[in-house]
Length: 277
Length: 314
Image: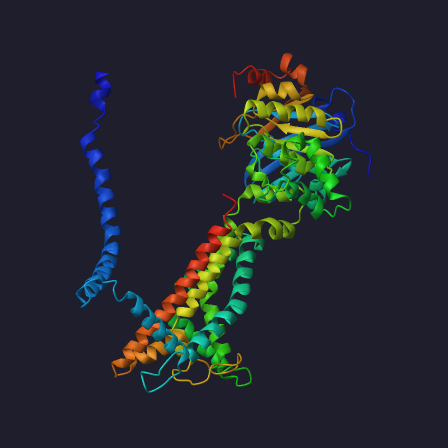
């Protein structure tokens, strides 16, 4: 494993404020969908065991950035990536086996998407296909406990996962992700389909999980970013080019309390105070 | 306010009228089909009411028994110049052979092609061309498949060593070709209906494409695929024209014992009985149609049951 290049050395703006070990970093990352550029020159270093929130107006490429980290963007036809992404020091933006990467960088989606299987198999499937050689019952229980769902489902593990409520389904999806023992969990607006009580439970869960995992969360909800995250990256759209298309750029990346109380970038300030967005 | 009123001409009466007119036109279209059915049923009921017993259901029990006896006699009898003894045993056996072998040959190829086109083939011009052609093949008249089967399987373009002749296998391959487009298209549609979120969930856990397809996509698409294949098979079993082209025998006294035997099929035998000048053979043909319809209805019912049984992802 090579020594991680600290992107902060080249791009002072992206320097994570505390000098935590960086687990995931993008260096001059650009993304195109066909001829359309979605992200330009994103440089960001995400520290281990912290919650990093990605905020910004619609269409600024938050989800695109998130999906670059586990190469889910590869599935979109015509998506191209320039620049570099490193995970634990290894370059993961080139020609790598995304299947191996995705076990180590899990993902929770916007809309809860349990498998049409029972609760037990929802959790066990990912471990099984990755060749887990341990006590499966124990792993399922541990994952469900970790996702704060065990007490609600321990007596109905063989009921369909889709019979659960929306909030429970989302925690089931988190349990499913935990079962393959990832190092990073990417969350793409995980609460946008949930009611406030379910949202609070997921947020509590995230706070609990950050001791063992690194979490990157995309959210539209600035209060949520403030509540849960340690660091916040605010993405923005640049000024329209000649074709009228606007590309996503990173406006500011700071500790959450600083970004929301004393933003350095005027665009960030305009966004968090609700003047644009 | 006044200026807005002068600029908009709501014409509410006319707008409200258009809807019901369109609805009525659609209703009329529906009624055309229903009307044919009502007239048919009405004619049967009227005929029953004219019979001597006052209660039209009076004779239903014994008549049913008689009908069942007739169908049994038809199913067990073989080709005969005596209409009282003629039956469909050979054709029925031939049709069941065809059904089984087409299922074995045609369905794996059709489902496989559908999975490849939908899940593996890189999108682009080539895929679009193949796709369009398969869709067009689904509309090709069956007699054309018969001619194709004759040239390709029965005669093998004159290469005697591989020519199958008018054997059961030639019929099976021809019918398999015939149902391929239907099976491919329904398979693709069933796969396309699998939600993207399900695929993403599997891939995000570190599944390979094959693991995703095997454990999530195929199970989820299975009811649709099975419905399509059963409907394809019912089409195969009802076909007459291509089988006539590839040499299904009209009069045969022996059911086939293997794929290289000569064979006949139910619709081919019905066709032959219906051609007979002796009107009593028309009764035999009608009986054969009953058997064929019963077979087809059973298969379509199976398709519906399968679709409902497995529909658990909604």
